[in-house]
Image 1 (cartoon, rainbow, N blue to C red):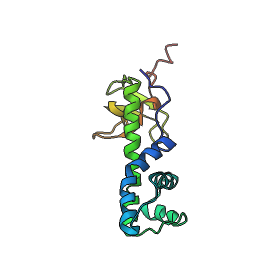
Image 2: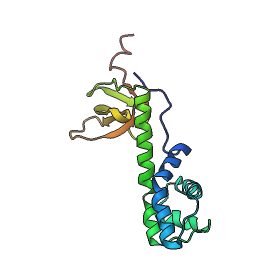
Image 3: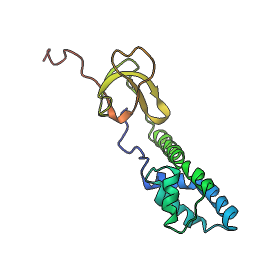
Image 4: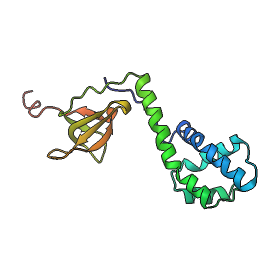
Length: 168
């Protein structure tokens, strides 16, 4: 069964908000330690979501926070450096929930020749399945070792069989 196109995007506002939720307690604790009190939770969430959505490192996020009246230090930079992981985690959780809610099954067998719409892996052989996230591991033809490109299932189709067009 090919999945629908509703796969959650790591850049969606819902994912960014979920990532900010994962970080808000640490940031709030930092405020209490530095200033004696923290702004309202919603203010912190809003500021975090606005800045981490760009996928920058902790230093650059902290620099942007200065423009919002924050006074970041090395400890906050370290906390904000976790935003990339927080986004990844929130996205992976959303994808797993989406796969389960849509009962997505990977139906292309290991060893099948496939084509993809991924520009970095236009064709290859299915080397493995990642059912929880509805992704295939695609190996380049001729590759002798394990591993490969991880491609979303909706970007993978079975390649037309060699010679099939000759029979027509």
